[in-house]
Length: 105
Image 1 (cartoon, rainbow, N blue to C red):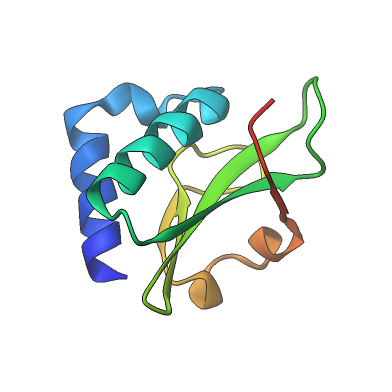
Image 2: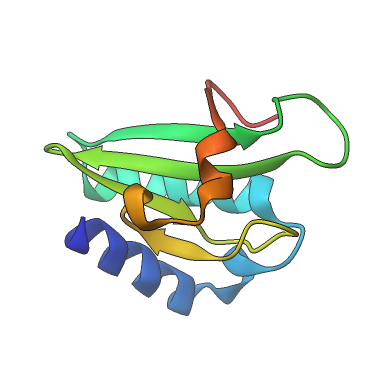
């Protein structure tokens, strides 16, 4: 978890547009690609709230499972979804309402 979190924090410092408000679709896609390149054996899941559908009100995050250690990545803060990179168990309870999806739309 620490390696994944440190990698994503460094990525956000290098490319601060990844945490721009309203940029969660683009941010999740770019971070997912970078994490998969850096940690090819990690399982990367896209999370969405409320459900994946076009339009406003949809918010995306990532959950990375690397050898059983999970990291929740919410690079773009949104109403009700604070910026967070860390253990999903310690995250704000609102993240538990997110569902896995296969792609960003």
